[in-house]
Image (cartoon, rainbow, N blue to C red; front, side, top):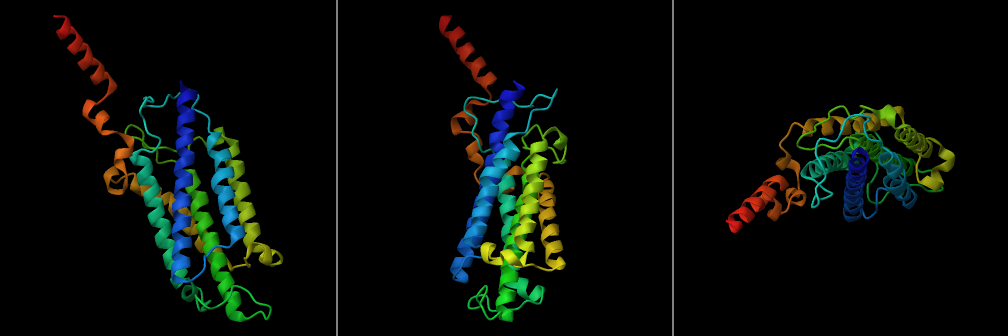
Length: 274
């Protein structure tokens, strides 16, 4: 029973993480293409985001084992949907947080870190080593680093599914039971810093080394994903659940629980016999 419910929950964890990355990435790419005429992320960077979102996250989240003694509080019902209101609340809150952060850094980031350049006309890189082109590349590298930090830390949030009966604020609880998750996380972090830390690979990854101030800012904003996840768990689920009806059909809502429906049908049968 523990393993059966655990597999179902692991699927939900992966879907929650993947939807968050998908929606956030689509938003910033479409926004950049609409207002700036180009995507803030290069093709190679988008491929790396896709690897993290699909392959690495699947390994990390699908290998979560059930608790040795604790049984999941809620049993799985036949008509349960994959996406619950609590999952939608987590997805929408993380998307809103990431959208606000990326909007601010996209348009105000250059002035915040003294790397002013024309957001539309300045190229990322040119052969003459133009200073503004270097600033533009630093800006986009900083955006890429911040986006990845927010989603890598959000992967920890997805370890703990919330439900009506279970609210877990400590997303690090029991991480030692799944070393695959820890290994995947540190591999992702190291590859990410490798991509943004070496000028020799700037042509490959469309990145350039950024200052410690930018690294620290990206790291703190990544940690902010943990704070946002903890904060929204104190809010009513209806506030940030975009599609609350996905978790329960109208027919199920009218019938209530399976036990109540069974009792009603049993009573009806007894009345027919009488």
